[in-house]
Image 1: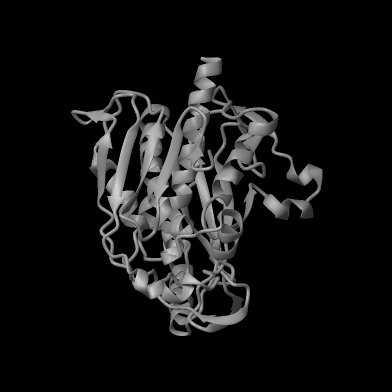
Image 2: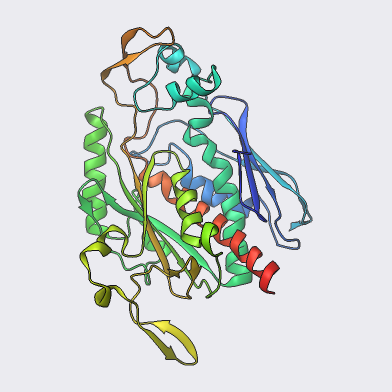
Length: 359
């Protein structure tokens, strides 16, 4: 079904933005993994609104509760159900949207598909749905780190035209978390924060790019043809709210190079096959080659702006609509843990598939 992601490590999210709560069911997590709420809450805290002056001011503690799938602090191998209560829903802030479609939101497309929509906060299309993804991703990251030695990170690479200088092989978590925009380049981060604050004052929004990194992935993960590792990563990233583009390794920039320049030569170092460059982004033929996996995801400017715009209503009359409510002027700082989560979910699923097929 459309609400489930993965093959062996399966994640099903549920809930709407202004309903009673949101959550996730994780099926296929191996048993005997040490797991409590304290392993998951830090990533939810990085995702939640109200954490800084450059994100949505909605006040949610996003306190997670594990309902099933663990016993005495360890996973059972059975479905893990987790949920977060919605504490600060204000559907009245969306009353104008009850009959009007917000430009560039999913209001019209959901109505066209289902003939009904949860207009307060956008329902399932709200970024609140990603609470379930981030919770599941925290489990996946823990599995990858403890049982495979794989580290998953993400950071803000670019806000509009402001580009950070970051080495994906050396970037550290503490540097990413050293500022509210989650950019490890301190000088670029300061400029990014000023731009986002300017957009908020003007009632406007801005987009940018998040770079994702996975280090320590062994050679051999991924499937030929349709389930290529980069294909699954691309699908995962493009399923996130506000995402618009995905590229891996050299990406679109690779077209400016020749084949001789772009190829990643192999060498043997200390008994291990390595490449002297990494334009492939750690994946060749849809299968990991043992090098650092790195990719970029572009996120559009948030669709809700505090200005009057043209639209139509459910009776298909031309009208106007004015943005209201609590919204992010830039989705990027809160999207960093979302990108990490989806990366981990793809990798842990492929790790389990590889083990099942190849031992």
